[in-house]
Structures are given as structure tokens and as C-alpha cells.
Image (cartoon, rainbow, N blue to C red):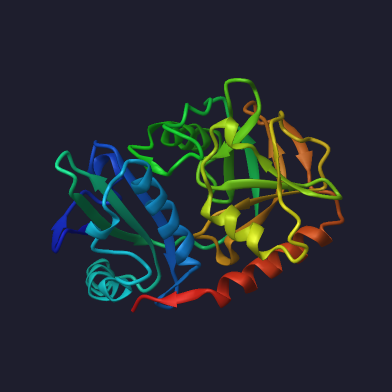
Length: 284
């Protein structure tokens, strides 16, 4: 497939992973491009900038961003979409810090999967590895999450599934490709950053969209088997999140099913979808 890197286009292996493009440390973001627009791009930019700040790297050396360099995206994406024969896509933006302080950027696109109505969740054996720093940045080569994704694929080849990792203490931590939140009937919860979970752009957007503005509580705990609702949040999903229908352990035994009353979760996800749409930006 075709990729863009620092002012030129080149060929990389089809469906190349982050580590196949560069084995070196990098920051990366993935987001959906639908109808030429991206939703809530500021949160993706903020996470990249936070990582660069942590390493004292010059953000002004970036060729791409979503604030003052938005116009740089159009010719890159038009070329990649045309070459890959795509209209909508998952876009991956990678930033590789070099030894001399410069930054190498990569952009790739791949087909955007259909968003399922709901997901089933599998509790995985792959333990979440230790973050470089907290709050955890999204960095490559991303080997631990890829190992978790491989485990999930072995448990179920279906596309309407997601996996959850535990930390070293047995607390629920991170999904393979998503953030996790749950409603206990009174409040919303999500894993604490001490569990090594990713600093999630979609979770931040969800927090900002909540009408009550009540902070989502951070939790260090095993799987919350007595909760009312479970949701996964992922920027590439339509609306940014879907509800969990069933949860299975790593032996494929059922450990949780969604109760009939999902009014709070449905209402929150409807508001999140509207919130994200209001903050969409055209890249084409």
C-alpha cells in the first residue's frame, strides 16, 4: 500500500503495522475519515503534542497538525485515498523522533470497517505492560497491545468483539483498540491510569460530552461484574462508542450480560455522537 512520509509517497507492505513501518519509538494516532471529515481532531493533536512536550521536542517541526497546518492534510489524503481506491478510511498519523531532534512523519490509510451495533467483550490473559510514563501516551511499536489483539483473534475471529487486559495486580486496564467505561446505576467509571491504560482521546471526548459534567471516576479493581452498562470507546467507531452485550473470560465462559435497562448508556452515547459531529473538521 502507499504511504506518505516527509514530502514524498512510497510503497509499504499491505496493511503494514506501526512496527513494520518503523521499529523505533514513535507516537501515532488513528482516526476515521468519513465524508472527508474527522471528528474531534483536537484531542488527537493534543495527545501527540503532550508526548512531544514530555520529550522536550520542538512541536513547530511538525508538518501536520489540526490547528495551523490543517491545509497540509488535503493533498496527502487525496493521493492516498485515490491510490488505495477508498472514500472513507482509517487514517494513521505517525511521528518518529530522530536523534538529531527532527521529526519524521508518516500517513497511511486503510479501509474503514462497519461499526457493529454492539460488541462482545473477552477478558484476556495478556497482561498490560508498563507505560513509558503516565498518563500513558500512544506509542509504537505497540507490541503488547498487538499481542493482546492476537490473543483476541484466537478466541474469536468475529469483528464484533473487543478484548480487555488486566494489569500486574489483576485490575482491569485497557482494551486492545479502545477505552472502557461502565455505568453502575449512579456514576460512570473507567480504569485508573495506574493500571497502565492508555490516555484515551475517545474517553476524553466522552467526558466532555456528558451533560451532567460529573467527572468519570477512576477505578483500580477487577472486572466490575455487577455493573448496569459497559461501553467501549474508539475514535473510529460511528459515534465514538458502542455498548457491550456480553462478556466472556479467556476460557469463553459467559461472565456478564447486559441487563434490559440500558437507558442511561443509550442516552449518553446518543449525546456523544451529536457532540462529536458538532466538532468535525473537513480534511478534504
